Structure formats: C-alpha cells, structure tokens
Length: 236
Image 1 (cartoon, one colour):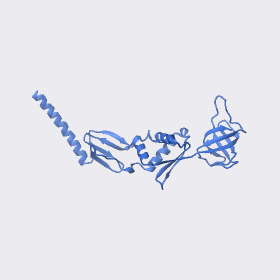
Image 2 (cartoon, rainbow, N blue to C red):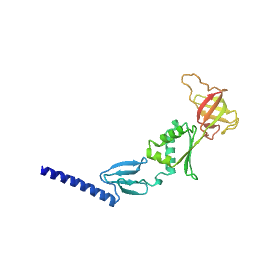
Image 3 (cartoon, rainbow, N blue to C red):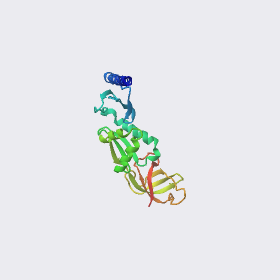
C-alpha cells in the first residue's frame, strides 16, 4: 500500500513539475505553453490564443503576449482594419453574384473611418442579415461583435424606382424607354436589363409596348444603352 502511494505521489510530482516548467518557459520566453488548446480569434488563423493550464498565450497582429489565467487581455484594436473589412465584403460579393440583389455598393469613408454599405432594403433585419452572411463563415462571432461594438459599418438605403415602356423584348433581356424622370434616369433614356421568363408561360408580360415599374439597386453600368440589374419588374 505504501509503495502504491509512493508511486502515486511520484507521478503527481512529475506532472506538477512538467506543468511548472511549461508555465515558466511560456512566461519567461513569452511562448505558447506546450499543453494547450488553441482558439482562433476574429476568425483569422493569424490571430489566436493558446490556452494552457496556468497561462494563456495571445498571438496578435503585431505582438505576442503570455498572461496568467484569469488575466483580462485582448489583442490591440487595430487587429481589424477598415481595409480588412472592405476586402471581405468585396470577396463575398464577387463569389455570390446571384445572391446579392439587396446589395448596391460598399466603400471606405476615410473621413468618418467607416465602411459605407448601400442596401436596397435598408431595414434593421436586412442590415443584420448582411453582416451575418458576410462575416459569419469567414470570421466568426468575435469579428462580428468587434464591428458592431465599434460601429465600423454605416448602412445607407440605395434604391431607385422608375416607370418605362418596353421597346425590345428578347428571350433573356429587355430594353425599355423611361417615361418619367427618376433619381437615375431622365425621361426618354434607354435602359437594358436581364430577365427570366416564366417557364410555364403564365404572366409573361415582357412584350413590346407594355409599361412596367422597375426597382433596382441604383447601380448603373455605363454603356449604350445603360444596363442595370433589376430587382423587381411589375406590369403597370
């Protein structure tokens, strides 16, 4: 019995010694502990925290820091830049062109130090949906919280509606003539847009001479005639 206890105490002593040495090397040399669990910060593999038994090691953009367990610490706020956020938005939009009908534009407002994003439907729900869709898969909850807490995105409504008459009707596009001045077009302007005709042939109103009300995200491709991506086309 005594021999068993002695072996047990030796094992405990060895384990305590290993943990102590691991902790000392992490603190003295500002290293990660050998026995750790790695947790990614802000969804980027370049930023992470190695959680050890007694210490945590933070790997940030411009510095590494080893702290005792329970010590509050976070990477410097410049870990997320406006360029980083803007690039992630552009990257998502370029990959999911068909799913961005509510998106209009984004750019960096240097003076205000925010990313300006234009949405057709600029409701609170759509703003939240845009943030989740853009950053949840690439960056995670902490990244999203940082953006919200620091008000780094400013949303603006970007929508135009105009009335027009169809003057060209092809299988996959129509060209219209604007009937009244709108935010984007003057009366008489010619505008082209892609369409998807109903497969069952019902309610297909894409016929030359029909008058329509068109909603789009205010983005106009300069060509002759001008081109837009229509969000909604209604017969009037």
